[in-house]
Length: 157
Ligand SMILES: O=P(O)(O)OC[C@H]1O[C@H](OP(=O)(O)OP(=O)(O)O)[C@H](O)[C@@H]1O
Ligand SMILES: Nc1ncnc2[nH]cnc12
Image (cartoon, rainbow, N blue to C red):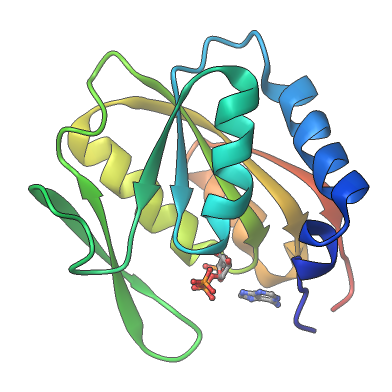
């Protein structure tokens, strides 16, 4: 089933609560940057960064970022795509939290993890509004050594 987060975004209380809950989970853990992936990762990553008082770094589809980038190909359900990050967006001293709206197969966040590793920043944690664990993303990210946290888990679909 396609899980749509627009019903959270257009409800001011639900949107605020989702950011509150993520902030409660991730505050005071020493994170210095949030990385969010185009497009829906921006919608939750940027307000959480504001709430935590840390910077937000976008991972984007190809050709969108103006400075020098690192690129990472990844597999979608049908075909492949590419994601990019600015080479100077993070430093080796950064402790990164990855945020996206939804975790399905984990391909998007695995690619994001590899981009952060190309820079050499530390990344240990990922946060989502929704996870669909039957699609394998949680296992894939945990096998990479990442912690996975989701506000909602839908099992059996
Ligand atoms: O775990 P995965 O199987 O990789 O799938 C999850 C990703 O798919 C969706 O993004 P999509 O690529 O559709 O881009 P969009 O946010 O620009 O719509 C969603 O927002 C996640 O980023
Ligand atoms: N099942 C799903 N629902 C919403 N967005 C998705 N992106 C990838 N799989 C998805």
